[in-house]
Length: 155
Length: 155
Image (cartoon, rainbow over all chains, first blue to last red; front, side):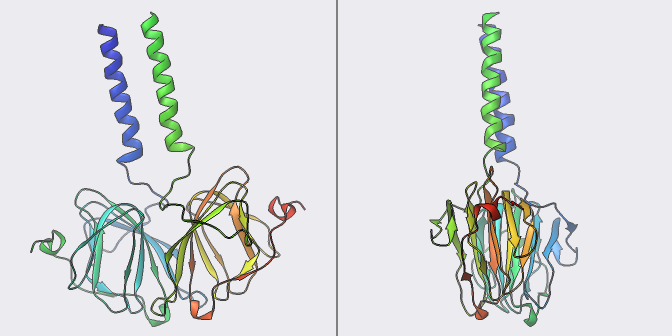
């Protein structure tokens, strides 16, 4: 009976370790890249450029990993932005609209010249691919940080 | 002793099942979507539209899952194409250039009006996000299938 019990304990421990590897970590498609500039981000975020700007595609693509609690400043894109969430949980908010929870598989659009911010949730990081189209119109205009009240959705 | 042996067997079986879930399957960010049109694809591929065409972003985004052996026909994009490989192994070939092996984390660009094809490798499927920029110039021109000799890189 003692052996049967220890077997059960081993199986539970083993199962937990196995599950953690699959479920709790954030899946990574790309390496983290460079720390995102502290003047435009709160908390720790990492940016990896995937497609630099040029006059053939007029499109910038990259990946940002936000650690839990990290978020961008408020900002606008002169030609808008498309976000593809590849793993984790985060928030996206367009100025004047409610904060939106975003998850793996979600696609978020922010129209040209509209203020928005995005980042990870409090508990879980966020992996997002960003697409900036029509870059001949410009790329980004950075603004002020997202306050803790805005981030925490305090009414 | 019989109990200890059966414990070992259970642990090995359990470990194998656990590992298979993490390693052998192709990671999926999105559901498969619709079967890709048989007139433009060889083998089984699935397309999920993520961003439809409009005059604000002028960008079409989607995800294709190619089963092992599946590939697109030869085709061109009037404004070019950007592929982001999110899992698996596949091939990309620009007309006149060698067939290129593409893997999770790779970014592939095909310039405007240049013939190319893409698909999975023989043994492993491919998950790819496609970005079509500047869609005011057009989206895609489909051509003839990729022959088995072309697919298998027979010189």
